[in-house]
Image 1 (cartoon, rainbow, N blue to C red):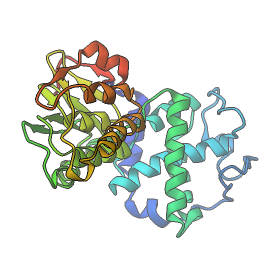
Image 2: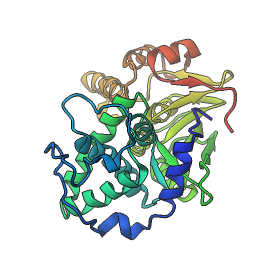
Image 3: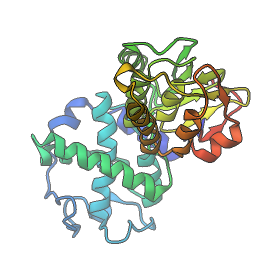
Length: 313
């Protein structure tokens, strides 16, 4: 489902990742001078040297040394490992960067180890650096930043969690997050009549942060749309039905002004997810007891959906 990454680069990456222990990624220093991120130090020591790259590779983004850029690619890889406490993962943008810029896989992993030591107890700073790095690497490679998992034999893991026909009620987000983690899923297939907007957006933000994908192959309406919107990549099948309408406004928003704030929250959430927020305005114009079906053409144009696929495996 979606774009595959079956290439010599990813097979090499899988083999090396699966040989690295958790201990190596959370505290083992590597000999050699460390260039601080943004320092521009890449004069043959640490991670700017030619030993870390393949000759003839693309130059890094303007204003960035190879050492700086390798640090950012490594930080993005480290983010996915840290989020999942699993060395058999990485980010699709890291794979694309290794290929485009010619970074050796062992150099990416080695630099990840150094970043952990370099930042030490400054976990929040490392998290911020890694999150921004994933955004930069994704932009530079044109590859959406998504979670990539490997099976023990080095093949890509394609397991998705499926939820069909369940209303989004209190506790839904926490329960689904737990199931996604236990299943080591790379995405969520969601078919739901909707329910709690709060729970849907909480889950949607988790999905986006973790680089997980979403898909619909039956029907997703009301608050379910907010879950779909959270996917780093968002798929539907040709027969899928996507529907929007006014949400039931909670009592705390029962005033006219409160209702406007509720619509504004929907607008801001979709904009946060990189989706045309006019979808929220359209939803606000449809009574709660009716459903406006979104055509697949409109879903693609607004960014609510990133691709139409034949089936969800």
